Every structure is written in C-alpha cells, then in structure tokens.
Image (cartoon, rainbow, N blue to C red; front, side, top):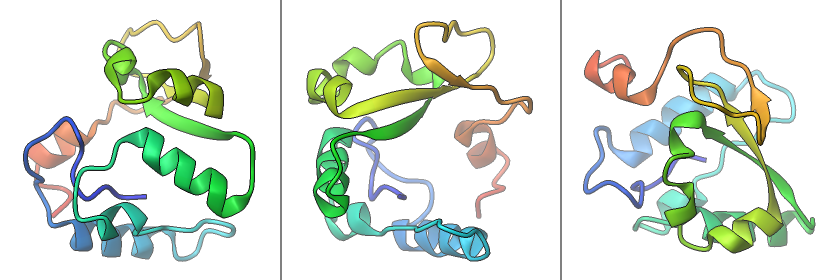
Length: 125
C-alpha cells in the first residue's frame, strides 16, 4: 500500500498516484497480491496504526503481519499508536546493515537496497 505521504516526511519524491500505478504494474502477475490506494485516497499522511485498523476491519481479522525495515527500529516506539500496533500486528523486520533484529521475526535481505538509495539514483522515476 503506497502512502500518500510518510508521516515522518514533509514532501514526496514522486507523486503518490504515479507510485501507485508503478506498484500495480509490478504486482499485476503476482497471485493473491492486492495493491491498495486507500492511504493515497486519504490525501494526507496516514499513521500506520490507522492503516492497520482499516485492514483488520476490511478483512475481518484479529492481527496482521507488518513488514518494516530494520532502520525503523530505532524510532518505532515514537510511531503513533505504537502500543496498539504491538497488539494488532506481528512485526516482520527486513534486515539492513548490521542492525540487530533478533527480538523480531526477520526477513533476511541479501541485496543492499533502500528507498533512499533508489530515490538518490532516480530509479523510481
């Protein structure tokens, strides 16, 4: 689910609708993969807790998996609704650099990639 605007950022590098269209194109041949524009339709930064609550209600489930990059661990406790996020999600942490992820389920990533580096190299455009 592409964001409209990350709540921790002041602007976006690429228009949200363009990012949504690119994501739809990337995922069009992946079975059971749905790309949602729900956050974009809000036309404002949406805290993760709001998205999680939306998905839990939409799919009538109790919990869901939330994949985050290991670089988010240093400030995750500042996220709006963090205590509720811990109850409503199972964090899956994508490994990055040498950040310790032992306290979480870990998705080991073998290629050094980040959205920041993609933006800097203008690969997303």
